[in-house]
Image (cartoon, rainbow, N blue to C red):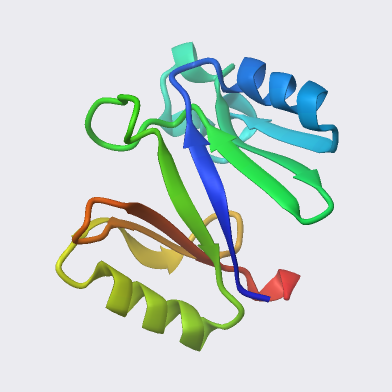
Length: 138
């Protein structure tokens, strides 16, 4: 099922923020520190305790977050993205092509180490999108 979720970006306090949201909202919290990820060797040791990816799940509620700042500086207003989880490879290719038209590509649509086809862009209205399709979870 195609679904849009919020994806928040923090500047080193993702663990604290998502733990707070879990206390408030309940649910199951999963966090992957940078140092425990396949990207660990590509990142400075100073950020190994920061969160590469976190997900708070409670029923249909999915709140995702990270300390991994995209290119440019992090400011309130660019610290979130819409994460579009697609239902098929055809769908992700169509959405990626149409939504990114006239915008700026941040990360080309490609297979990632976690097994999903994934890409990031800012659309022509300045909204950041993260598109993902994981055929193993469909």
